[in-house]
Length: 356
Image 1 (tube, rainbow, N blue to C red):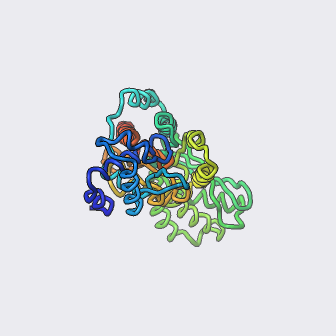
Image 2: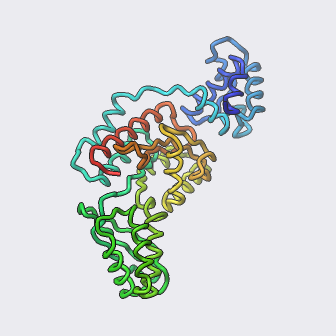
């Protein structure tokens, strides 16, 4: 049992009720809760002074904090964690929310990227937060690769798949590349890629590269080596993260400090920094997971919460994730079933298409 769970067990009924009411009120309004407000809501009749003493005890335990000099209290990150783990009542998915999500994906002829975009829009629309959708890798065999220079330190790799799908990815090539070296690198890759998927390409290229290395110009060699590293690791997930609903977060925030945190979050999302870790978060266990504030290593600077769930393909392999990110006072009880349902829906859609 977690430390938060033990604390919860050790509380008496009155302390537990005061704690629960403070958190629920905070999640609903975002405002500190005072003892006078609680005296009107408590199950048993107790004085404001008694409530104040209980709140001081909860503050001493690190579960509540005072944001200002006011008498009101708000839950700390530890307090929110304890509430989510031990007191959160997850509601049933409403017919209205289900219909809103289903309505966005009703057209089954959409390609996967369009489908994922719609899923993201539906999720942000229903939750009024920002949605994150990590799309599955495109696993059809490759047909053709081409490099296009965009400047001295930027290039585009065009990936054409056997099923007609095309992906363009910007990357930083090794310095000194010329049109000739890019053409030579592409010719080599095209000679070995036929019938192989993107995830297989790295090992195929490594094997063939060792046989034909000396036949390639030194610049072309560097490009092939860096290209292989690129699509095996950092490049792939960067293109696969779809973020929708940023404006929802701004609409929620009135305070300057909160706006600064939201801007930090936007910067993180724009750079898509450490997005590989986003899937790692989801892959560590099935079902919905909640990360609060600094527990969320991706967006800890912005003090945001992330509700995330992986989804699986027909082989029960995790191929992506969906999530909602917002201020720590998210309506967790409502958002958890929405994220859960969306992840299961995406899994079914992906399985039916044979993707991932």
